[in-house]
Figure 1 (cartoon, rainbow, N blue to C red):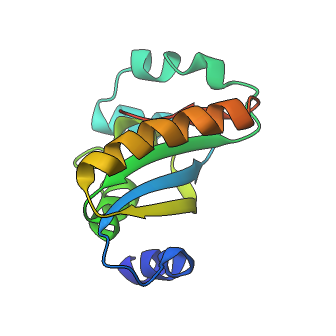
Figure 2: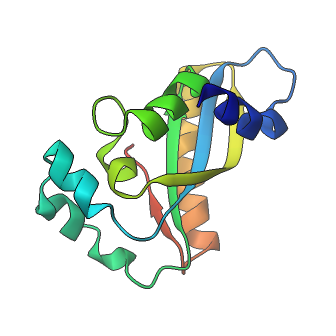
Length: 130
């Protein structure tokens, strides 16, 4: 529900007027095969993440100019408006949010955050659409 998403985001608010967010989601480690079949996601999409096996954690890094709406899409509308990755590997918690005044800077920070997470936590699987 929207209220549970808001409660999850409250610790990540900083009082600034920046509205472009880079976010890190922790996701389940087992793909939702039934979700894939129900929404017509090909099994090839699942198999392309085979190096995810054995990962300590599954992390997804994204960027949005409306974080509340975007998280709602990832959680409640996984394939229609979310991402195929989070339709297969459902988000379970928000790990981090960074706020930026410009979307361009947020996009650059998204790639940097994914690279830093990949370097810092080599036993985790880090996905990002960027």
